[in-house]
Image 1 (tube, rainbow, N blue to C red):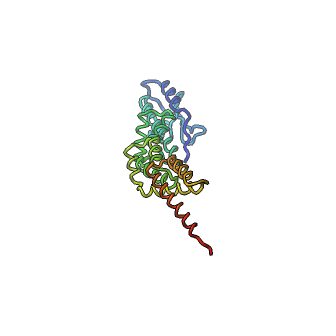
Image 2 (cartoon, rainbow, N blue to C red):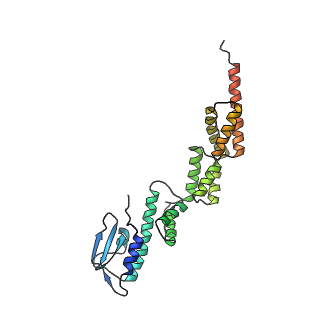
Length: 244
């Protein structure tokens, strides 16, 4: 479901609310759907009006004839901002999972206040829509097995995504040395076989390639030794081959 948000609602609502009279009972005279939005409504109090999300309107029973004081409306504005942030968060999660830091950065771009960002992050985490430990674990597995990247590369990626160091370490510990070696070996073997040149040329270019993909120096040396042995073994087979 795509939710259309009101453009720059903070500025519009704050300006409208500042014009509302103090200490006066305000009665809703009309409720209408906002143009170009399926989920926001304009609430009219005679000559005054404000916009709210549909969920907020329902929660506070903002229907024709209902009355509110300005203090009540200030509370509603905060609730509406909280709902706007939550909806924006859901929209940001539609395409793929996000980390808590990525979500916070997105909400700041939408000019959401820090207090509300913290509340929305807590709600999304409670609903398991944001789960940094699971995100780190799945990201590490996917990068090792499918993208053939090394742990050094993965560690840096997760840092940039704002994952806590302890969660990164835990996620990488789930990747066994054998799994990382197999990933590096498959990647290195493919590169090795593509290079035209002598063994030293293959060793230099393949090693550099694996280092760029985030495999450690020790692991790269291990892979190079295996590939060199495979090359020597293949050469011996050709030498002993006698079609006669």
